[in-house]
Image 1 (spheres, rainbow, N blue to C red):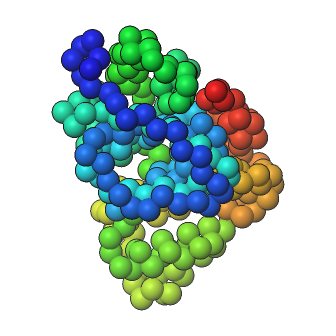
Image 2: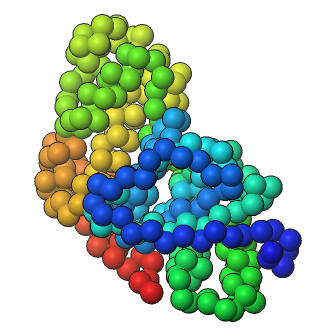
Length: 256
């Protein structure tokens, strides 16, 4: 029990190989999931989140989710009692992780770092809870549409994010008018179709970069006209270039 009465327990550190999956499951507790390397895809019925090392995802208690690793990945997770939700979030959310929180996660999830030192662990748990009240939620979810026609379009574009067909052309493939599809995309995902497709391409870019892809090859695979357009889109979404982004992952959470 932490000094302020909140319970934090169940730290985990799980190495995952490239493309290794953790199947659908749920927890009775809230979880904070932070990959220390690689990119971790977190999928739920509501949508998909791509989480690199300098991000984390908050998974509320009871939410069914699955994980998929891109690149050699190490999943680190902290658990929170069901009654404790310092973020007051009821759906999975990607968070901007502070350097201090990264260090605390690394220490709390290390098998040997705090062995036999309950007092130090309680102190770090209190720091983690305090930091979680300060982090910034990020709107980087890729919503999963429910309408079968939208699901078909989503499947087509997930299979080939470089597919450049217009909504009219995709509508012809799934048997729906573009105006209907446009309305449905806004109603079911909260985004226009171009916004949703951009989000899809950026998520795919994260996974390809984690797998060692070059900026040029990733730009082509994600349907951008060239590296410059990709870099501009990536910088607008994440505040940095894809090259700098990928280069920062190795040291995002120190190896211990």
